[in-house]
Length: 407
Image (cartoon, rainbow, N blue to C red):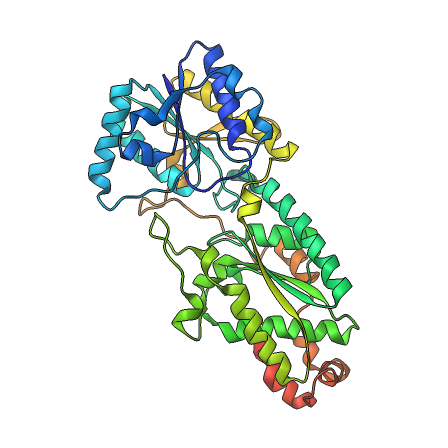
């Protein structure tokens, strides 16, 4: 029997993996069950939430967002005891194969199950996250990322037009946790005015005021070019790098994994308020609106790329298990479907590795070149005077006030 479980947050394409894996498994003579509610169901031993899956049920679901099996993030306090309950539940149900769909947390759990099963249960993982932070070889994206980026670009493009029409700025905060892939992908493809990601501040903590100065500097530079509008895309992961002025500014609850709910940190609103004060002090009246996007991205219907991609992954996962394989993550490039051992994605401490944006790469440098933000050459000669003339500051005052905005 094959069991399919989904962990972590939603991502466009989950149903595509469930569909293709179920169809291939049933055609190979296997019984298939879906674990409704993710690992939490297994931790609690809720056998009533584990149900059969049929070809008729899954044939048309690849075009739909969400997950017909739902999903959950769960890491209980008494995890060792709950893990034993999960393994016992798997044993009672007679599950021979486990297909785990998810991100870094799901990979960690799949690896643990595989290690404890000692060959009695074959385990395979399909990488899923709109954050795109699992280090797949060759720069391959995780499924769900391209759809999330596509939807994010649509939203930001509309906001850019609204900003132009109304003469205002938008600060748009995107999901992404520790990595800036999604924010950068959206900002670059939409042609946003500026995009800020946590990797820029990897080696040092940065104050919220300095980040605000980067944004205020971009607004002033746009004004010097005769443009009173723009959109800044902000990666939520910056909240883990920023030193806030007060505890209230960075407050947020923690999720089931004990991690800060970055989507609840009022990053955009805090930066909006501080930037507004900075610009007011410079004699500038600028309207700034903050907006968070993320949930609407991960719940979107998958674009053709992710429908195609997930069909390969679900099929490849079942073929891998049928050949006797276990303990691997399934990937698919333009030519082939491959299996990579879990160990390739696990660091020395046993945690899943995280792929970050390489800010030294040419790919990032292209994105940076097309941003509007203060650069060292802006504090020289005619350009410095032009920038200062947009404010109530003299050239020397402007330089002293905004030189910290160069990062």
